[in-house]
View 1 (spheres, rainbow, N blue to C red):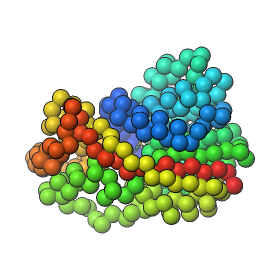
View 2: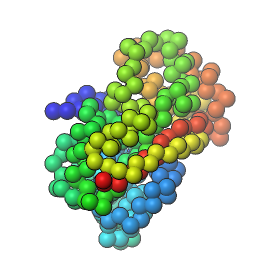
View 3: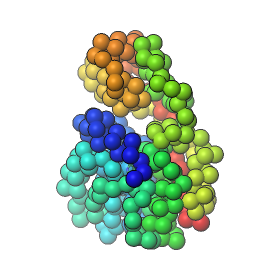
Length: 283
Ligand SMILES: C[S@@+](CC[C@H](N)C(=O)[O-])C[C@H]1O[C@@H](n2cnc3c(N)ncnc32)[C@H](O)[C@@H]1O
């Protein structure tokens, strides 16, 4: 089986943490999803696949955008996040596309060939061990007029919301090993040349990668301390702290509070996010 580490990660503590934070994540990432939908102009699509759909909040936004008569299928490997996603189905009505969810690995799930006309994702396609293989599998699931629209993160260092907390954390925790920039993870698609090559090799053309920078409200909470802990739950610091003792975690949180204080306004950490919006068509 491929993607074993990711299956373990998103079904373990991390997946549960994300599931717990779903309502917050939905709120803070909604503007990114709306902007991606505007950018990609997906309205004409009828059968969409939302890859790495997580808690499904962007699947619901997509279903609202596509409207009656269309369908959206969210696919994810994470049981805890799909449990949260299930409640989004109840929020659809006659004016939205029908919505369903599937627990499976998008990299090798045997989709019916040509059964979707849109491959969509908000930050859910950077976790494949073999991205060319995964996108080839997803290409087969698309019809000949099929399209792709997804968002992914630009490099960690270009994202204040990851760079600044990580620098604080590294005062107390060592990086386990120099990270491979292409390793599966949130920043695996940071290099647009690599993304172009993966999509081109998988059978896509007219690949367009546009920079989208915006302020994002991270860690919405009544105090700076709580906001910092929320940010640590979802960002790379969370991965770094997974095997650390409570004392070290507290030291890291305190160091984060110092560097993040200037960003805490109106009950949230307002920090810049550097994102790629990627669109492509079946070649
Ligand atoms: C960063 S989260 C994004 C979740 C959601 N799209 C959002 O924007 O809130 C990445 C998601 O990709 C999922 N994922 C990772 N590898 C996957 C795979 N091979 N097939 C399907 N889903 C996968 C994870 O379980 C996780 O839910």
